[in-house]
Length: 114
Image 1 (tube, rainbow, N blue to C red):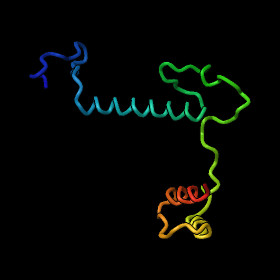
Image 2 (image 1 turned 180 degrees about the horizontal axis):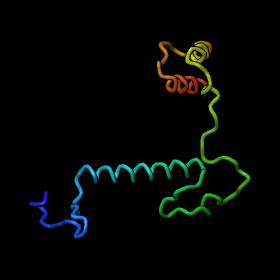
Image 3 (image 1 turned 135 degrees about the vertical axis):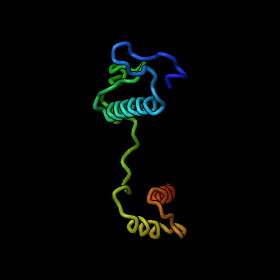
Image 4 (image 1 turned 45 degrees about the vertical axis):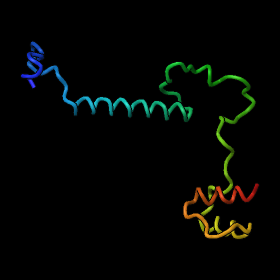
């Protein structure tokens, strides 16, 4: 490496000043993790790192009487097991075979509700 980049070493320690690709990747991986944690914390309302252009005042805007945070209302089918969901689908007369994925089965039942 010294041949490619010449004398790019620290004058006192003698360590190279050129980073390897592995070191650079590790740095960016750590930074991405920190950003993700900060984003998750602020999304959950725990405060934390604010993204550029956002301020804490913007989240307290408009009317405080509405407690919804933009999230959809809780789904009554989320707490049920797949067997229970299949029974509900049969009772509603929905066509079989039913989807194997719980989320897809819930969507099928909700479409049958409407």
